Length: 106
Image (tube, rainbow, N blue to C red; front, side, top):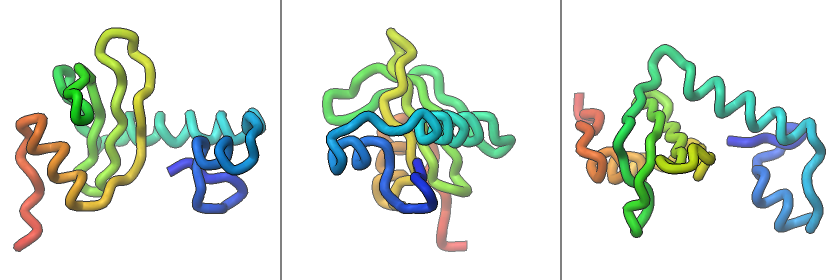
């Protein structure tokens, strides 16, 4: 999701690879992309959801057309993760949160 100079690696991979904090421009770009996903007219919000194997309480935005999910910690409001997921993981996340998955057999 987060793009650095049109490359395909994101913020976490940037830090892991370089060992440095990224340029502020990269951080702003990531914030803008998350905002675009959350405020897209085809994106839905689930207020009482869960994230991960520990089923951490979260609220999240999801878009069935693009398979983007953005998770926020329910207690702190902190960003947990936000990205485009593979179809299998995306569908599992929706099922786990009692949301009907897209019917791809049409």
